[in-house]
View 1 (cartoon, rainbow, N blue to C red):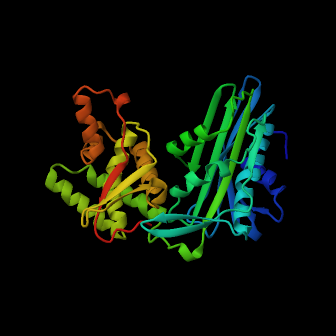
View 2: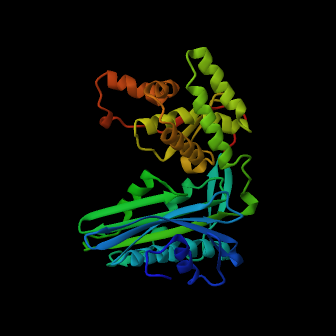
View 3: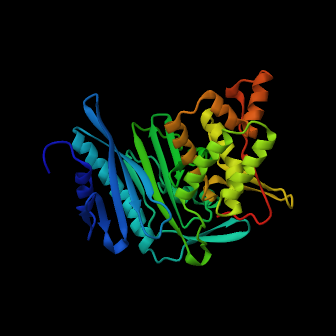
Length: 376
């Protein structure tokens, strides 16, 4: 390697040097024994007060996973290359090791989640260690053991769930984050903060990071009848349709069209109910709750679920975010879509009645489904 700042290919070499049997082909690191494929991107590497901070994003894919694991890893150092080396090392010691462990584990520890009364059984990796940097302030630093019981209800129908648990302490300040399949969950994050057994200890700096990959057993897994790309494309099409609604009749016709355009009715109901609400949350910059609720208009049944349990949710949210970013819809176009959002109508009424938006509490999104609804 030269003395200049490392490239993405150099990063892959750093990881490959510590990964037995791996090799690089083009822009991809391949671990053939585990059928793992890794790409990376150096997002930034900046100097600040004499030290460097690097942020790298890694994309890890496997033929048995529905989607790539996307993980950001940071590093610091006296030089740009030292910072990048730390970030690459963090990826190898957490994400890559966690995936390899999950794929090879033949232990007998499982956790069971239920969705619509159906059991989904996930293999718990034989190793789920926590990476500690700085001072050691947690007597029992295994974050997975600390949070396992709370995370299981967030598991659903997907083949693979990856859980990232992070906690950092500086003096009296505590920063926590819990991510499932890349998305932050505020309820779990707050719970991790409450459960950290600090016992009044203070530290100059300490951090803990755990990355756990849970793979569903084939016996309880059912393949999803649509892909993330399908949902993304249908989401963009739905937003374009909603922009054209000009009265109740045209709105009802568009909602019916959105439902009918989906490959299965269940996805159609989710899109019709959730897209306007997610659009509202992004336009008004509202935080997401962890939960959702569906209401079956045919039999009157309802159930609270977690957004991590819907295979469509992340793809819808991503499609809406990219649509807003790329198309920069006008205020008038935004309002056309927002008219379909019950959340927006409630917020608008509250503001007109004198409430302040920062004082409003956003409830879980409720969406309406029909007979035969199935969560994938």
